[in-house]
Length: 552
Image (tube, rainbow, N blue to C red; front, top):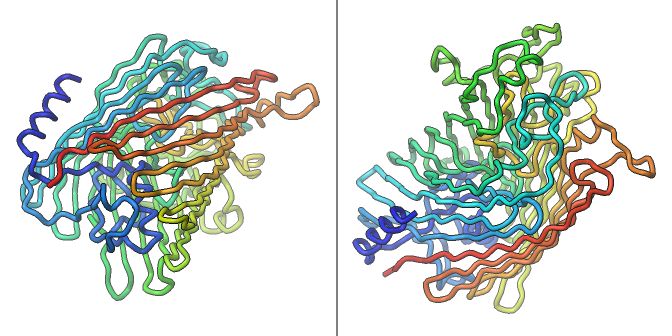
């Protein structure tokens, strides 16, 4: 930590006259604010569907009258800058009873006190940009009651429904309830990477977080619930506009890592193959966004991810081009037990739409995804809902005096559809041939509510010159797929469900060079771990400081 802070202070001293920036972390405070400005018609040049931490600042923010104009000018660049410090960010989180948190990156907010510190700098040399913005985290990781892990040989901290039969197949996942029994300290690359920008095109190598699609809380394919994974990307650096509309495209290749609390070899008796001990997986993905010249404000998108165990023979054309390869699996692959199944890849595909109406200061969006291949076009037509999930939401601006209020709502469903009763359909983010699932170091790469879950969210935020305040309500029903497989019942004969109700308040205040961030959440979780009457109350407190380094 001392090395990170010392190096950052040296950069500040050397580059103080330079215009500093804060990385716009997807799903974070500044990202949400830029979406607000987009509703006001004051932003152009934002990405359509692919949001990395290194996303360029908007090509234009029109008008100086937006609420935070005195604090964040959102310069688009253009100066011959060679070295610039990046704003330092520190967050502390306290959970009174149980782990609670999502979209907090590499930090795992366990019970007790947890924190993360990020600081760094950016070097520009012609078309090359190098960003070093590491994150140092710690967590007290205090003890709390765990669900029993009944599958033999697994860690007591493992995902509790390991080996649970979900109709025809068994669920496996590298998704620990707790990361050991000691305090945790990590040093992560954070939003670091090297990028080559040539006109409208870009290529990069980084460990930064990615966020795909229009969702504000629970994007299905890529969120910031886990830390960023090492990856290479290639495509458009900003949306390309022409007579036929606006287009964005990006290809991604990366690697997912296994946590120390999951050993796939313990699952070998239940598998028809010998799993890799290290749990490394290769991931490839593609994102397309398109804004037609008609219907102003409408954006449609297509995103796709495939991942598999890292090939023993190395990466060939089949792996590197997998995301743009075949879209159907013709039911030719058969497991050792005679059941039909997909090939070695696990595929997730999503289509999305977002419609922004600046004249009404309103937007609506939807992301609809599938967790499995269709056998052929006929199968897709007959049962498009097989292994489906979706997120839908809206935002609406309301004006209050000199401030701006935003009303936002979102709902997400990841539970299986009824097609699982007659054909294999594992819970979201799980796959037979990759038992670690869609995780990196034990945290979800997709939606933070987790496999088989559903959520509903409603929030109001008021923005003004000196900051923001907000209130929100959220309901999450966890692990529906486990609940309907176990069919445990309460004293009234009703199926037990694990449900969390959360009410929260949050604020951001600008003071000199600091942004002061605070949030208080009260959660009441009913039937935790699907145990009748196992109700828990958790208080979560978050305090943060962002130091805006000197600006001219």
